[in-house]
Image (cartoon, rainbow, N blue to C red; front, top):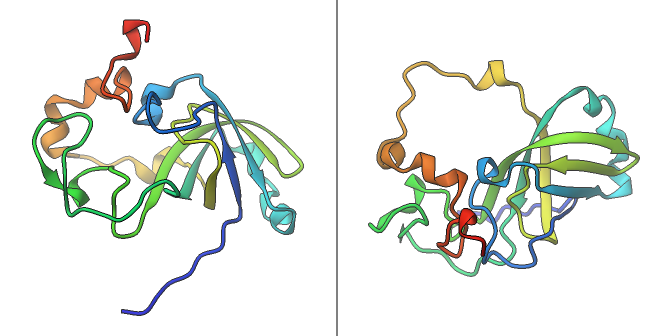
Amino acid sequence: MRDIIYKAIGTIHSPFREPKGMPIQPVGAKGIKGLVVVEEEYLEGLSDLEGFSHLILLYHFHLSSGHKLRVTPFLDDHERGVFATRAPSRPNPIGLSVVRLEKVEGNRLFIKDVDIVDGTPLLDIKPYVADFHVRQGVRIGWLEKRSDQAVSKRSDDRFQNEGN
């Protein structure tokens, strides 16, 4: 298979200096502020973005090294296939988060609901359009009994409401 090379279009900034202690999904990061700084050469591509309330950020898991095809996700104690998880240890370490867009100032996007490590390279931005993503009959596999924990659980396996 041939190599595919991407160039970062910007950098995502957040209060999280390392994965430990950060929310494990955007739903658990409600209200946490962040900043996306897009490289000046892509400034024109940000036109009309402020009309959207939410964005999909695609990014590179820059702190991930190597990959595993079976992982134990934060919300479980059983090993799962990596493609049935959102774990960062992937063959292509690409992350996806839906964040709330507060405002656009030049090449700076002020965002909320951030579950991303500070300094993460941004690969792409797409507008989130709920009508395009809503599906009937959605099943969420092994997460069915665990999805409510994503709101309060952090990546260091502690719950946010424990005061840690």
